[in-house]
Image (cartoon, rainbow, N blue to C red; front, top):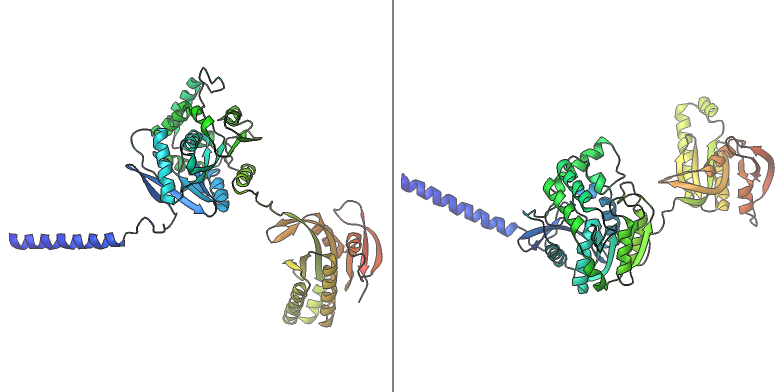
Length: 476
């Protein structure tokens, strides 16, 4: 019996060894594409450093502040804004410093030299020899030292709301009081993990609601333990990288907020004064980073510095000619011919309108029951489209009226809004069946064309200041 048991044990061991061998063959190599979040690990000594490389273009290494979590960061205000913008215009390489986030924790706080080793390991793993480096908040001192120590690996340097030294010293009287800073770090350790600290040290304008508090509490717990969170902030309070400033040769951009409550702007000015040819840009604002989109102007500045161009301003107001149409006396006609025949007639009308809109370059904004709202780049095309619509409607036994006005419109996704739309809606309300009524603005814009108009007097339009001169487009 013992021999049989030994044989079974041997067979089980051999089966396990064969299974492990197969599993080893199936494990992807370091060059395999990551799945899910895209998080990879770089080996730095005995530590694994979590990082992501997202986007395309110039390589940019983002050195985070005291604490981070590269996966939850995509869901966290301020960090998410940085990630999205940088990865849209560059190849952003973001990582969690050892001791935080998804990187190995360790039992002691890493030194600046160890942090620099981690950056080199991440750059090597990401396949980049040289990159722009962005040092954010507490990540600034290490970014400074890295740029001075490894100039061949740094193509540019961005320092955002950061410092070379934060704490007071006899030769640095602009520093913050060390006792007050220590008391704050002690408070961090007591309250960390409940979503109360992160709004104080990073996103001061985060929405104060239960959902955000729950998310920030989860972020705090995932980013670090209470003791490590306090230790990281103590490190930021006492680190001194001033000796590196004169050795930095990379083009440098320093950005700060005028009333930053965490890192006063005087620290940013000090950096710019002591780094050769550094460019300093100060933005108004009494916050460190924004949870409500106020950092877009900073990210514009960074994008221009890194890529040579700013993103195009979003187009939210444009000049358009707005056309409203509707079927005159539609209720009476529907009652006269019955629901089924009315639906068939309405379908034919809608198809005819859409055909003419496509023909004349109009954009259907929406239907209005028995009519349409459309926009055009030019008023002449809008009028000719209205003429074609009324003509085709008449051919199927319907009388369509139209109202037009040209002016600035507010773009809201696929919709348009603003006073121009309101005026055009009031104009159509004054049109007779089969008539195309326009404002004098439209008439003036088509001067020199073969379009003709008949005056229809001046009218007060409900909700619109003043009186408006209206004109009827002369029939073809």
